[in-house]
Length: 494
Image (tube, rainbow, N blue to C red):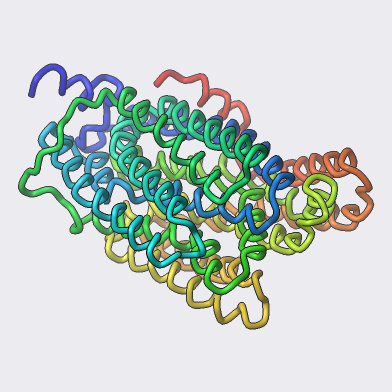
């Protein structure tokens, strides 16, 4: 291996992540500090993305009708799916082991061999069948964005292996700014069907070269015998991520078949508004595998609990505030045309609270249980949501996907809690209880006041009050983490 390859794969920035077994408390502390800082950086990234997203959602909501806004959901679904499954599971193999240049080049070759034909077929078939009523141009733009974003997943995995979350955050913030900015500009000047997909493609065209540069990519694609595609841990991890993303893709993909365009737009809008707290969960989830894979037993749980408590401390107050203020927030900020989405906003706030604890638990399960068993659990979760949605639609109409998410997530949380108690004597539900008590108090106190929020200023005051009350109750019950730990995590050196 030459010097050029060595400085990326086993550089000082990757110290402690070469697959060697953990040795002593110092190592666990160092890894825990790096994991916490990575989560903190991604949380800052998410805060910036959330600000951009809220501005974009608000602007697009005012510029577009719900039926046109539905395209936002299809584009963000492509972005999420590509980021989650674009590496074909090969990224997990790189993260867990000590990647060689041959393995990285072979992984790229397999990516290209899979995604180029897949995206070409998707574009041709989608245009021919007029899927969801999309034009040929819209389908082509979506397929091209999917290809570039999928290819971006492999160099991102190398950055994750090095815990270079600052670099990842910079690219993802840039992409979201470009996507939202171009989408709003096109919606204001020429709101055609392909305008939001074009914004997604432009963001992908900028983001892929940027992440290649940050990962110091210099490997050419070459097929190598023994690449772990579609088998073993990497395959189970990849299939689990596909299933997880399809759980949320049920809104546009299945919704586009059984509901009207306006109803799909309302569902996508509710998801977009609640995405501010919801997308905090993946920021922690992304740090769990590369960090905790190098630890064992008690060390894994100690670090995981800190990450989870910090996540709940940040996410639950926001979700509670959106649940309480769903009606005045919608009427005073987004407008009367979105009023049919108010019940969805409340349901998605509940689903977000459950997702805040479930999402980071899945990587931990992969580390303490057989990967195949965890994969089957996640696939069962997705299958249950897809099966329940059309049944519930008979009585709940377009609220069905949200109701299905809540029902299945509760069952999943109970199952995950039991599995972790058995293997690590750890109950994530126990860590959730102080936050849930805070939510109960904040919602009970805030809901009677929601109808009295007569303008936007009153709504914002109520939002802040509900979030603050939830936070105070959580801290009083010894939930969350010391805020000084959060600041220390941001200030620590990588």
